[in-house]
Image 1 (tube, rainbow, N blue to C red):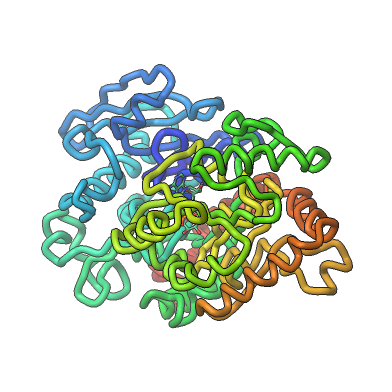
Image 2 (cartoon, rainbow, N blue to C red):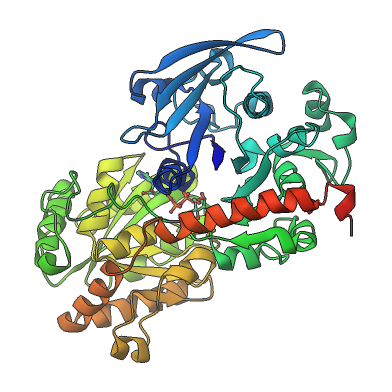
Length: 493
Ligand code: ADP
Ligand code: GLC
């Protein structure tokens, strides 16, 4: 099958979160299954620098000149095109936000351009001699591709993956006019969302198949609590909606070969994990006390991640034999809270505000316990990395966290099937209680070891999930032919 995979971030060329990890590993897994998959993403300056020998292809598009840089996804043979439009993408830093933290004012134009180029690629209007059978779109930045394709008589099948429904790409009506989108798209059954232009609705309404990144999140987003105002639409497309768990890049995230670790280790050399803990402590000047457990957290400091729950229990944590290491950035108020706590208690709390890939690996390896108390979590990758690294995750029972961590109940402990601690209500007291439970197990080294090893033994590779995506592409192709998309009058219920 020929697959065009479109994403606004692809590791290692550009990354703000898990979307990049998925976009950098799923295409390689599909390629390993024998499919001809090619990636399209914007040519941010960092992406151009990280690309291996990019080769400029000058092309004509709708009367204007356009450059695609042709390269490979680093470390693979997967072809990758960088859309080189300096006026739109030639900016350093966060791909969505200006340095002041506000969205770039021309985000709609930037990602509409990405969509238009993707559509032209699928029609081989750029003369590359290649036409995909399927276009795989990811999140709102690619949301205009499905509606624009719906105008094409010979379009490929379209799959739209929701990595996070909370980010929707909403813009005023004037933007819709400025983008000169077909007027027929301005209605509730298309891109209009309470008087605004919604990019994500383009994917949700017009794709042949929609999926999210865990089975639980696929169910949750059909409810008002998690549906972000789109639950009704999603319920109406239930028959085309599924959940496929993310896999991980198990080469980049392998504790036995991780180049960022002072002491790589595996399930049979688990005692070496402590060397990494010592290194992590030394980095921050935390005392190297074997009785004290290190709690780690890495992630975007936003409400989604339950950061406020952790902030609320910081004083209680200081009463316990624990140290806390936090890496992340996001909401300035959350950043300041952590910085204040670390300044007040430097021998117990360490914080790095920013983005640091090597440090993220060291925390995954050096911490004893990983905290992920998310309010919602479409899939989550860090809890997968921590299980692979023998670092016991504490997670909320929500979305992909619920699907990937087995709570250490007495029954599961007895059966050797416990891989973490799961708590339910999004309240500080319940997170604190989960920490108590984890520490009780930590005090029993044999039990603790078994929980660590249970996580390490799990298969989080893309093997199974990549095959599921292939199945989804086949369904999309069949659905397109059967007219399953709700934008298709044959399917109007
Ligand atoms: P999300 O995509 O919602 O941010 P995920 O758990 O799916 O959450 O993926 C987050 C990814 O981003 C992980 O690979 C994680 O290690 C990485 N990450 C997040 N924040 C940072 C940071 N400050 N420094 C380094 N890596 C980070
Ligand atoms: C999103 C979600 C996260 C998911 C990632 C990759 O950013 O918040 O849960 O793991 O996308 O799919």
